[in-house]
Length: 279
Image 1 (tube, rainbow, N blue to C red):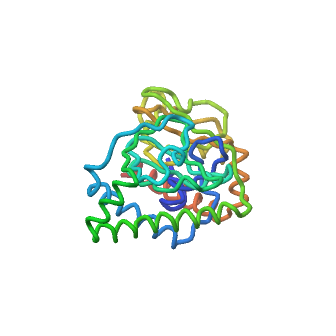
Image 2: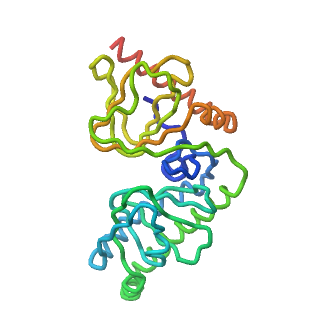
């Protein structure tokens, strides 16, 4: 199985999907290195912030289709279990996943943060957060820097999303333990990404490989035109993003660099397979 081309931010924050949620498969945005660095810095600091705010956090559940901004705008929110898609005027700009921090005001016009699934949260009210910052200047300084990083990342993604881009329709599907995600012999050419979870690849009952989070799979049928060569079966609950073969081809045509990355990844996989066989 190939790991999805692109950086961590491109994979987790910007995958290409139209508003049908899923985690859009591949990024349709070219993400500047500066945004990559800011996103990494912010994420690395969010766990420190959470630790300092532990006594002020309360558990909350965000129901499917409910906007996070409307319910908790201005508060500091940590994603415990689930996923939120952040969209601007109907265009996906990033995803928030387990461990991410979200803190934006209610007043952002055209900005929504929601999911197709129930999301478990830990929330610190704006008042408690302000009190904590007042009592601890060092925490205040580091927190403001972290929130500034998140703000700069979002501003950059919004600007990139405003530009013309290919937006392949995609869907996010949930599979329970033991469900078949792809069937051997099937002639569909969809390309998929394991957004969350794990699956096994089996041929005639023999396990060949494991697909982990952020890995792409199913692309070989698209590239070769051959039927699916193996079954892919969920190991536990999985969230999978699916993009049709036609839409994926259009995405490749609009992003030549993506085709190069995909070719390199396939070459590495072939080399690894050869090594396994000869070894």
